[in-house]
Amino acid sequence: MLKDILLFFVGIMAGSMNAIAGGGLLLGFPAMLAAGLSPLAANITGNIIVMPGQLSSIYGYRKHLRQVPKRYALLLIPCFVGGTIGALTLRFTPSDQFQKIVPGLILFAVVLFAFQPFLHIRLHRQIHAKTKQQKSLVPFALAIMPMALYGGYFGAGFGFMMLAFLGFTKLHEIHQMNALKNMAGLTIAFVSTLSLYSTHLINWHVGLVMASGNFVGGYLGARAALRVSSHAIRIVVIAIGVITVIYLAIHSFN
Image (cartoon, rainbow, N blue to C red; front, side):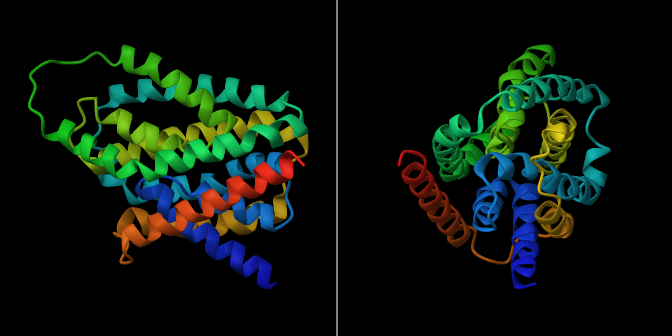
C-alpha cells in the first residue's frame, strides 16, 4: 500500500514536470526500477504512465492550443511515423542489450535536463526575434523524425528537444509550444503502446497507479507554475538521474 502511494505521488510530480518542460520520466524511471521492474519493462510501461498526464495537460492548455494554426498538425505525422519506428526497434532489442545501453540513454536525458535552462533562454530569444519570413513546416516535419524515433525508443528527454525545436517555428507563445509538445508526446506514447502491447512487458499495476497520479500532475502543471524553486527541483532530478546511471552501469556490466 505504501509503495502504491509513493508511486502515485511520483506520478503527480512526473506529470507536472512533463506538462511544463519535460523530464518526468527521469523521476518515473528510477521509481519503476525501485518497484522491481526491469529497465526494458520500465521503459515500455512508461508509455501508459505519461498518456493520462499528456491528455490532462493538453486540456489545461486548451485555450492556447486553439490559437495554434491548424497547419501545425502536420508536425504530428513524423511523430506518429518516427515513434512507431522507434518502438518497433525497441521491440526487437534483446533485454540484456537494452540493459547495457540504458545508462547511456538516461545520461543523455540528464544532460538535456541540466542544459534545459539554456534551451529555454534560446527559445525565448527566438520567440521575441522579429522576422517577416514565412517558414515552411515541411523541413521542420522532416527534422522531427529522428527526435520522434528516439522518443519511441526511449522517451526521456524528448520533451526538452521538442520544446527547444519549436522555438525555431513561427509560434509566438511558450504555452502554445508546450501544448503542441504535449500533443507530440501523446502521439508517440500512444503509437509506442500499440506497437509494444503484445510484448507483455507492461506492468499494469505499477503503470496504472503512476498514470493516475500523472493525470493529476499533468493538469496541475499546465494550470499553475510550481511554487517550489525550479533550481532545487533541477538539482534533485539531476542527482537522481546520475545515481540511476551509476547504479544501472554497475549492474549491467557486472
